[in-house]
Amino acid sequence: MPAPRVDGRLGAGLLVGVALAAGVVVWLGDWRLGDDSAVYRAGALAFLHGDSLYGPERLSALPPWVSLPFIYPPAAALLFVPLAALPSGLVWGVVSAASLVSLAVVVRLCARRGTLPVAALTVCALALEPVWKTLVLGQINLILMALVVVDVLALASTRWAGVLTGVAAAVKLTPLIFVAHLFVTGRWRAGLRALGTFAGLQAVMFALTPRDSIRYWTGGGALGPNQWDGAHWIFNQSLGGLVHRATHDAPWSLIVALVIGAVIVAPAVWLVRRLHARRETLGALLVTAFVGLLVSPISWSHHWVWAVPLAVLLAVRRRWLWAGAVVALFGSCVVMLVPNGGDTEFNWGLGWSIPGNAYVLAAAFGILGLAMRECWTRRGLRARANPGAPGLSHTT
View 1 (cartoon, rainbow, N blue to C red):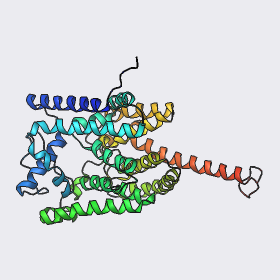
View 2: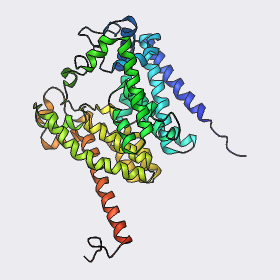
View 3: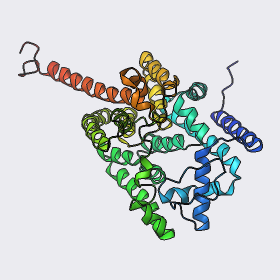
View 4: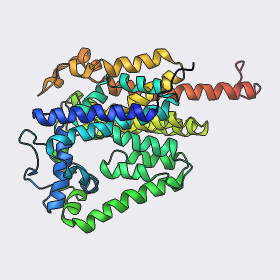
């Protein structure tokens, strides 16, 4: 008798059910989870009530224990409107449920395996620091990642290609790098759709709330200098964070970080094009994702959820050692174990600086290493194809 097959919808339903049940418990118990999801709801309510999203005053719908500002583009408030219909305490459960489904979708698209392996990989992914921290905070990193992955991997040959990437960029500016990815890989129509979706949503908000839109895009709101306060904190795992820590928040830190980023971007773009030309679509996308995390002025540790598709890709290719290294790095919570806070990061020394910048160093050296290997592999193939060519033969 054949073993019964587990319906993928059942697994997804269980994930949603568990998250929603946890959300109800959190709501009834008045637990303080979901700071960021509370901000999403408060931003939506401020938009609906005609209040300022970026004014100096605190968003009125925030719980008393949350004091975070709304730092997202105006279009994000429009897309968060469905959360306004939910009680404050229940928003965390709904966002977490959507995040878990998004995680399962990403694993499914990257693993291309049956339901049981996907379910197991999804549960294992919960042990990674960026994943569980995203869930605790009620962040939308997993949802945005799923939008991009579905767009690039599943909708590439459809007329909708690029739209979900544009939506993701309209919620947070950092996914704009995936719009550039579409152009770099020669997918011009998808790139234009992404740009059109992004610009269209912002234009809608200029019509609905011109004051907030002008304030945001002229630097008077969340794009102002206050957004970069605390850039040296260990949980900012970007090149900017690394340089701010190394230079004790010197005013020229961001410029140095941009120069270092440019050194990494050049070979990364070449690598993305090479991988895409070989139809290694996921590999090319991951290079772009990690470049984006490196060059963004702020990349909090919970933004590094792209470790999940990376580990899955390595496991599918049976690169067990590298897959284990990725899981060990992001599951070790190393950035939570290093002394931090206040000015502590300025006094690390070399010993603490390596684990304290672990995500940044791993991504930077990984991208540069892959680019060098690709260059050597290409050179070797050319040498075998034309052994007599000057500079290619081992005997010259």
